[in-house]
Image 1 (tube, one colour):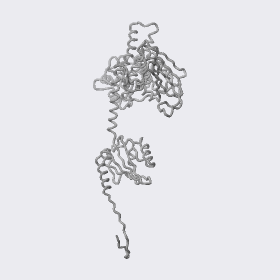
Image 2 (cartoon, rainbow, N blue to C red):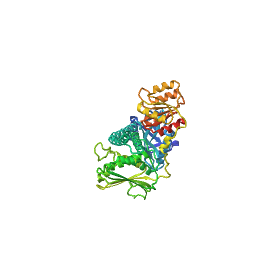
Image 3 (cartoon, rainbow, N blue to C red):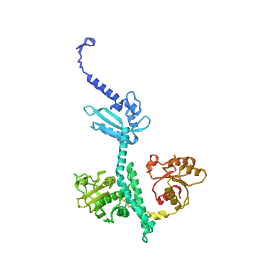
Image 4 (spheres, rainbow, N blue to C red):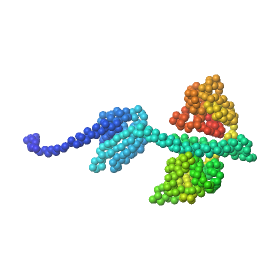
Length: 530
């Protein structure tokens, strides 16, 4: 092609023709996909920092579109403050390096101020020299998915509790045998000299174990975390010896071999006691004709594990507690499945199949390790390795001395409890502490007593009661009518089950049933100095 240039000069023009049909089709496909999905589709120009966003940002999160695109600050400002540094750091690392993109989850703020969980996937497009040109990705609202996952987890936990019912009934029957048997002997007067105190101690200890068992069930249903404390393991084992002996048959001898130099450990004591009881019951069932059950503790220091055996525990100091028996032992198949939930070789009704899996879960949560040595007809030894903790366990005050402490002053207490037996029992506890008690069966009666002008130092109320008003509602009404009057709520349900988000309103305290006189006295001392 010849061109006429200025001043009569001639020039040439080279024209290149490009077919952009496919490119236009790709752009149109991208536009259609962005409109068809409710998810957020975005394309970010890395040089300008501006981001084009699909209509999903408005339909899903309520944020309006912006002419020319949203600046990077818009995204950063709407990431939850606790997630922001991690997410922005991930993006910077991906763009500064040679990553092809990223995939992450975080909390994003809707236009109404509510944070919701989202999943973000992005692909980085680079020039030939590696310079980032654009970032194309999607953001998906995970709110419904997370809610369904939580429902599934709750359903699985409730199903596990259903599977556990037979084993729990078995454990409770053992505990009730201790309680009822000792109570019958005390009532009939068939008590050797000096044995009454020991029998009462056995009743109290079995009752505490029953209370701990229900507490563990509630914790399991709600997936409550462990509460580890610095613990003297030898002391726990010695305290459990009477209960363990009663869980075994008369033909089984229980032996303790506890190292006097045993290191302290950081564990949840009730969970450990439950684990030890499960191990002992498992050994008992492996010795139907009788035998010997031995519990031993010793300090061990483990070397570095072999590189090709990642299942071995880390090196370092551990306290090892071993439960061994002279029972039937296990074959390799049973050994390989012993920690699986619901796996059991026992007859129906004799176990839930969760005992050893709960032991394994407790040990792993405690940063420990389980070792098993077993063979058919050769007995079984299960060792729990718990990391050594620094420091010395705090000595526990003698309960009888703590119980015997008189209050600093006599208080006037209004007791609200619909169960007659419980109400009489708690009233006697309070009067035994030197307090003056007025007891009523329900919230309406309590409000009627308060309306007479009678003065009280504290109101103690059950939470779940018939009649249209529960303990929480009563507490709210008291706070409105009688500001400054403290309320102590009590319940057999867990704290989280009866309180709003587990949070107490000002002036309200909570005490879990069943409780001992010592716990009640301590709570009064904290709340009203009485």
